[in-house]
Length: 92
Image (cartoon, rainbow, N blue to C red; front, side):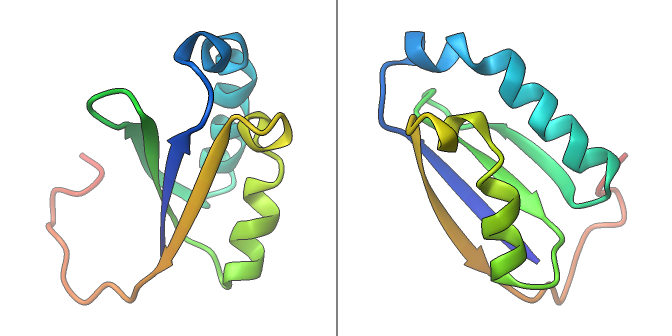
């Protein structure tokens, strides 16, 4: 399991220009079962994605498709972890 932290490195106005394409990117990976949850950071400085992938390399390949990466609008921190406990309500 991977936690992906996005940090915007351009003004939010530049991010907004690519938000429709970014949302389509997210949807593709929700449909594939790779993304479990995502959301904006508060204050709006980036985002967080929880990703189920087999390797860090796979996550890097997935994130290379993100328009925010392609157009150098965000930096990514990828944190691998092994879930040992979770709430039964996750996903409800």
